Image (cartoon, rainbow, N blue to C red; front, side, top):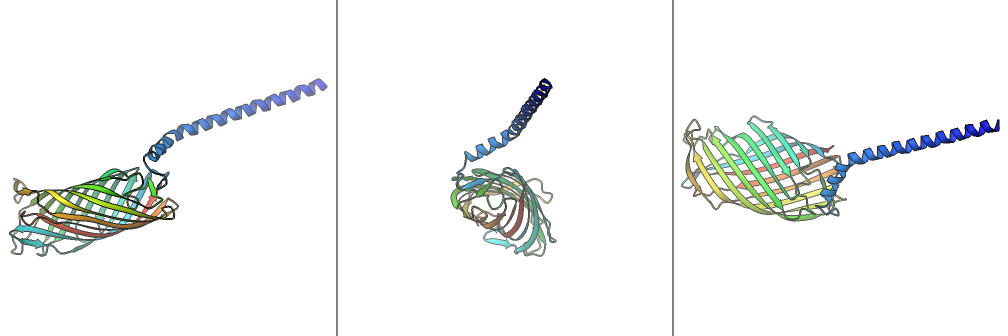
Length: 324
């Protein structure tokens, strides 16, 4: 009987040991599996951290971000007829909604107007901390003061280079969801802008329909931006200002069918402009962000370049951004 009891106890001990070893092996497999799936994420975080000062910028764990915003804006155009004569457009009010989706530093957005003016906008951007850019297409109508709306079609490519990306995130308020600005910081930056504007159905004060005009403009600017951070980036204020100079201005005029174009003026017109931005955001548990953005942009054309187009934009945007 004693031998049977000893044998049973020994069997139970062996079974328990085997079960424990099996449990440890399973736990190691799960741990190895988690490490495998975490490997890419850990590498990405280390790669990002190596490029920034984590005392100033905090990395979020979310790769995706969705944004919905409403913009109220005014647009004013001036059309130079040459010889000092201009057609000056009225300040047209427009209200539009923007829907945007971001992945890492990439973003795509579509907007549509809420009033009677035709207003469509599509943008695609790379919103990096050091280097980035945005491609933008916009179509709208504008009353230039003659009672007949003119059609405007814009293609715009803007690129920037930030000198202090380790401590400063230029897109922290508006488009950036990878970083949170923990401490206040600022930086100088360079901008380059390439714009193509097509104007059709332009009517002068003498009821003369102008032929379609295509304008290509290239400009270069130097600016400074600053992020003022409160409570480790939970509340953030942003301001930036960048004056720019037009380096190239080419005007081509086409016939009524928008064909057979010919260059009517070109040169390095010494015209200038600026891009000023003020904004703020409130971060709710790193998932939901509420914010606003006010922008003022204008670009003046040289009076010596006939048929050139100047514009002035002023807009206020309120947005909700969700990370996931």
